[in-house]
Amino acid sequence: MAQDEIENDVIPAVRAVGGTGRGAFLFDQDTTLRAAPGTGTAERWLRTALGTALGLPLPAAASSGPEQAAKSIRLHLDDALEPEAYRLSVTDRGVEIRGGGPAGVFWGTQTLRQLLGPDAFRRAPVRPGAAHAIPAQVIEDAPRFRWRGLMLDVARHFMPKDGVLRYLDLMAAHKLNVLHLHLTDDQGWRVEIKRYPKLTETGSWRSRTKFGHRASPLWEDKPHGGYYTQDDIREIVAYAAERHISVVPEIDVPGHSQAAIAAYPELGNTDVIDTTALTVWDNWGVNPNVLAPTDNTLRFYEGVFEEVLGLFPADATGSTGFSEFFHIGGDECPKDQWRASPTAQARIGELGLADEDELQAWFVGHFDKWLAARGRRLIGWDEILEGGLADGAAVSSWRGYAGGIAAALAGHDVVMCPEQQVYLDHRQDAGVDEPVPIGYVRTLEDVYRFEPVPPRLDAEQACHVLGAQANVWTEVMEDSARVDYQSFPRLAAFAEVAWSALPAPSRRDFADFERRMSAHYRRLDALGVGYRPPTGPLPWQRRPGVLGRPIDGPPPVR
Ligand code: ACM
Image (cartoon, rainbow, N blue to C red):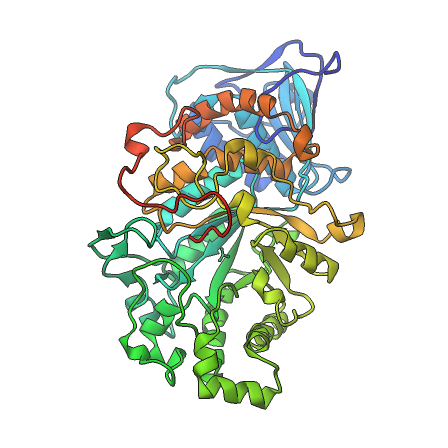
C-alpha cells in the first residue's frame, strides 16, 4: 500500500483510497446537505435512510458560499467520470461526492454509509445526538460490470412485498443494480393480470408443499400462496428505481407453466393429457406439463406480456439501467408432450421445422420479435440458444460457462450466472448441520473466486458479458430467514466479484476480504440479516431431519 493510502473495510472493495489520513469529518447535528441538480436520488436517500438512522436532519445548506461548504455533504455530477463511477472526498471541513451520473453519486452515498459504521445501517438512532467521525480520505471507485444482478425466485415460495423492498435495500447496500424477479413457475403465479384473473385466483396458491428436496417424504400440510397486485409491482419498480436498480420480470414459458395451466387448462396440451385435472404443483423438479404451441397460447401470453410491460416501463432506470429487458424463461421444457401431441406435430409440419427443439425456438422467436417491436429486449435462460436465437436477444448462462461462451461468440449479450458457482440455493458447507443441503458445496471463498468472464473469450467477445448474477431458487427456502441464510454472506462476496476490479481468481486476496467481512457482519447485524455465521448455522438455523440432496458433483438436481 502506498504511503498516502489508508486501509478501509468497504465491501465491495473500492478501486483506490488515498489522502493524507490526517483529520476527520464530524458528522453531526450541524451537518448540512447541498445537492446539485441531477443528484436527487442520493439526496433523498441520504435524508430518509442515513439521516434517519443516525438521527441527523441534514438540512439543506443555506447558500453556496465557501463558508457553507464547511460542515456540509455536497453532491455533484461530474462529466469526467463514467456514469456509475464516483469520487468521495472527506476532509475535516466536509464531504463531497461527485458522480459521473445520478447512479454514481448514489453508489458514493452507499460507501459513505459504510464509513460511518454499523449504526448507519439501522432504522432509528441508537445513540441520539452522537457525532460520527469519518477519517479524511479520497475514494475513487467504479464498477467492473454494468449488470450486477440478483434473481429472487418468488414463485416457489412467495416473498411478500415488504420482503422484496427489504432485498432492494440490501442490494443497494452492496451496489447491486438488477433484480431479476422470477414471477411464475409450476408452483405459483405471482403477478396480477387483470384480463386473466384466474392466474392469481387459482394459480397463486397451492394446498400443500413438499418439505425439503422432492425425495423427502415430508409435506407442509397447509396452503401456501400470495401474489403482487399491479400496484405492488409499481411500488417495487419505483422503490428500485430510486436506488438505481432495474427490475427485470420473468414470465417463464413454455415450460415451468403448470400454475398457468391449472388456471386456464386450454393453455396445456389438451390432446395429450386431461389438463383440467392439473392443480398448482406441490412438488419440485422439472415438470412435464408444458404450454401447447398454439395460436391461443401465443395470444394469451401476448395479453399477459402487454400488462407486464406496462408495469415495468423500459425507461424506469435510465441509461445505466436494464429496464428494457424482459425475461421469458425458456429453460427446462421437456418435449414429451409435444412429441405425443398431434396439434404440436401439425405445427412442426406447417412451419417446416425439423423437430421439437426448433418448435421451442419458434415459440421464443415469436416473443423476441413481439418484444422488439415494442422497443424491448428479450432475455432467456441458455436453453434459448438451442434451435437458433433471434438477433437482439440476450442469454442468462446458468448451465455453466458454455451457454455464455456460445452466446458471446454468436454476438449476443450474456449475463453469467452458472449454477456451479452462483446458485445460492446450493449449500455453503459440507457439514451435516447445513440446513436442507442442495447440490454443490459452494463456500464463501468459492463465490469470492467466481470469475464471470469465461477465459476463452477475447477482449471484443468479452464485451458481450454484461455482467453477473447470483440466483436464489427457493424450493427449500420457505421464508425470508431461509433466504437470508442462503444469500448471506455469499451475496457480499458476489457483490465484490461484480463490482470490484479483482485480479484473476487464484490471486484474489480472500484473507483481506475476510478482514473486511468482520466489519461487514456488524453492518448485516444492524440491518437484521440472518446470515450464516462463519462458525456454521446457529441451532435455530438448522433443519435436522429434512432431506436435501447431499451430493457434490453433477448433476445437481434441485
Ligand atoms: C434454471 O435454473 N432452471 C434456470
